[in-house]
Amino acid sequence: MRRRTLIAGLLLLPIDVPARAQALPRISILHSGFPQRTPIDHLIEALQSLGYADGRTAKIEVLGGEADPKRLQSFVTRLVAERPEVIIALTSPAVRALKQADVSSPVVFAFVTDPVGSGIVKSLSHPGGNITGVTYSDAAIGGKRLGLLLEALPGTHRVAVMWSRAVEEFTAIVSAIRQAAEAARVEIISAEINGLQDLAPAFDHIDQSAAQALIFLSDNLMFGHRREVAALEIEHRLPSIHSFPPEVVDGALMSYGPDVDENYRRAAALAARVLKGEHPGELPVEEPTRFSLHINLKTARALNLTLPPTLLAQADEVIE
Image (cartoon, rainbow, N blue to C red; front, top):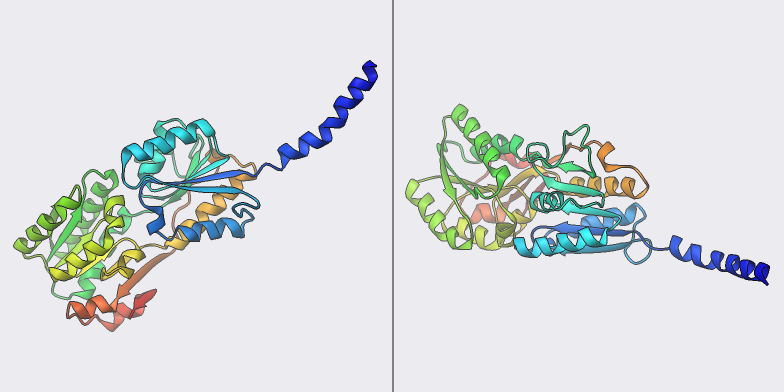
């Protein structure tokens, strides 16, 4: 009788083990802003191309903090408790919140400017811990954005920078812009904003300063309201350069930065490596290799600008 009981127990194992083995890996994508207003589908497509299709070979969820720290923290608390197989953290606030919560799941980040300086990883080559990802290297190209504006607008000698001091990385970016401006003998006008209520006064301040162009540093909130920002730039006759292509699609004059699609693809590739068993702390943080320039000619015409052919020739996309 005892032998029959043992055999019966063993016969249950082949049914139970495959059921566990077939559980789909869970990939949680955490964005501190508005993921539905970004090309988040490119990340989903990149994961699918690597064998992780939502509902078939993986369970993928997208969580958006919508620029609300409390909402973001509620998602972080849930992820700490649920422990998905990998978390893809998009933007610095998202990965910092996970780091501060001491999440145990592996984390792959993207669109993070300075992961070493902000304490997210120990070094780019040896991140340590359970976090790795793809940097955005935004500070290093602050001067390049200024140079593109000066190329678009020869004779410009006063440029405004609209930014929020609440975003830690922006301080380094503004510093890089100031250094480049000093070398080019251009005056920089600082226009700080902390919310939508500050936009109109900031543009009035720029008008009063007689700035001829604008470098706009978008945080999560402003990126979600990029159409309103672009409309104000056109209303105030202010040619601008931004960080992300969607800002140009929605009316800004130009954007320049690391290629967005490359960031998504490389983050997806790192997540796939983690899902296959590699430890994130041993995967070097990757730096961007491609940068893209986007120009909106419709906006140029609205501003009565004729852009130099040499600048247009550099563009990866020109919106007619």
